[in-house]
Amino acid sequence: MTTKNNPSPLSSLPSPLSDIIAELSWRGLINQTTDDENLPRLLREKSWTVYAGFDPTADSLHVGHLMALMNLRRFQQAGHRPIAVVGGATGMIGDPSGKNEERNLLSIEDLQANIDGMMPQLQRFLDFDCGPNSAVLANNYQWLGRFGYLEFLRDIGKHVPVGVMLAKDSVRSRLERDDVGMSYTEFSYMLLQAYDFVHLYERFGCELQVGGSDQWGNITAGIDLARRLCGVQLYGCTCPLLTRSDGVKMGKTESGAIWLSAERTSPYQFHQYWINLDDADVGRCLRFFTDLGKEEIDAVMADHESDPGRRAPQRRLAVELTRLVHGEEGLRSAQQATEVLFGAEIHDLDDAQLAGIFADVPSKELPRATLDGGLPIIEAMVKSGLCKNKSDARRIITQGGAYVNNRRIEGIEAVLDKSHLAGETTMILRAGKKKYALLRFA
RNA sequence: GGGGGGUUUCCCGAGCGGUCAAAGGGGUCAGACUGUAAAUCUGAUGGCAAUGCCUUCGAAGGUUCGAAUCCUUCACCCCCCA
Image 1 (cartoon, rainbow, N blue to C red):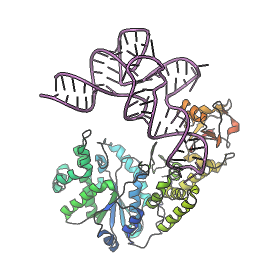
Image 2 (image 1 turned 30 degrees about the vertical axis):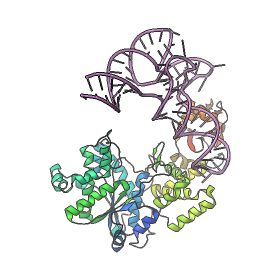
Image 3 (image 1 turned 90 degrees about the horizontal axis):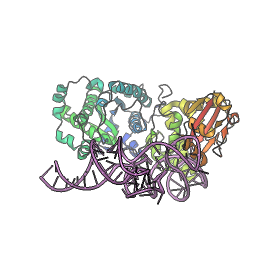
Image 4 (image 1 turned 135 degrees about the horizontal axis):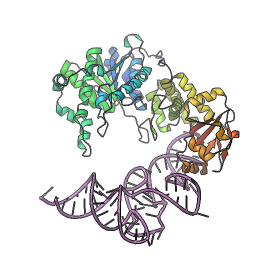
């Protein structure tokens, strides 16, 4: 996160207790609920407390977490109270749901670092100062950490039939495989999450848990436990797993996940990811990830039909999401870099533009003297990080994919000198259509 | 315990003494067309001081002028009979 803690305004709140299920439903955000019949009505009758959990598997959230986060946010906008739970305890165990092999345990230090990284990100999406439905941020280590093993077995484990646990998808799919197994530790994971739900019910009156479709088993485990332990009926609601039209998990690229932290994925890269989204996916993403209403999304998509070349929905999506995740500042720098890089041939850059670009686009600094004798283009491509070695650079140049300041370089013998500087000290290299890097000669 | 099959370049998968940096496909990358889209077409896809040199075909040795290909040992995987 580049900018401060000002979650974008929730002032445009729909009137309290609008029909949240209907809202999620037209957005395509409901995979299943535990009570299709009554939940919509119940959620209109009073303000609920709703929770979603996030295990600290990395020091940043990524696009894959966005759905659940936006869900919590929408519940808050609809007048409910969201609780974002960081899995300080559950993260120590590892959720087997959706995983096809046993995971390595994280060290306590790593876990803490991950929690520290995720907390402020979670805060961006929710409003912590809006009266009775102000968001709550919690760490389940606070209540799970103090449990003794025997105590847990007596108080919690006694109420959970193993038959039911074995029937859960997350367990069954693992047991059916003969190449991997499942440890007792991971098997127990669902009990911890089940108890989370019970605890949040007792402590905050939380009656609804939301999450991805892979969380269904864990959510229903919590509901069962609450029924046995407290004699109450809790509810669950899952959203679909988000994949792109080509089957790849949304937010995954060749080079890894798209993160929400500016250190891992710069605002520019983040912005670019959405700009480059397939036409086939962009409509869904607008519904999933933005606060835009139905009319507005329909309008943008209609615009796209009549003039696809403008790629209005991708641009709109990129703007909305970059602003939400990186703030106005991050958005501005991403847009500025985009404008310069994807514009025409680059001649003169002013300092303001440079500052914006340098923050975000991969850049390398080289001694100014490098230019005196001339810098072979092959070397420049490698030094900038655009090409992984000289053969690679040769290939790209030969095939016509190398550009300096948006002007194609012809011939692998080309040598760069001061005349190639786009500004005082900077050259803009490009490999292919959209991979940029800056070289600064200081 | 006995018998058989396998391990190949990012992945799948051919090759079974020289013509093998290794077919084919997938992926990836670049180009053309477009729209920083998709589809399609074209090309590239071990490295380097580059018409040559070096490293690669599970690991280590060996045979040979020459080994991914043959032999030996080891490791891992699969199948069949116990």
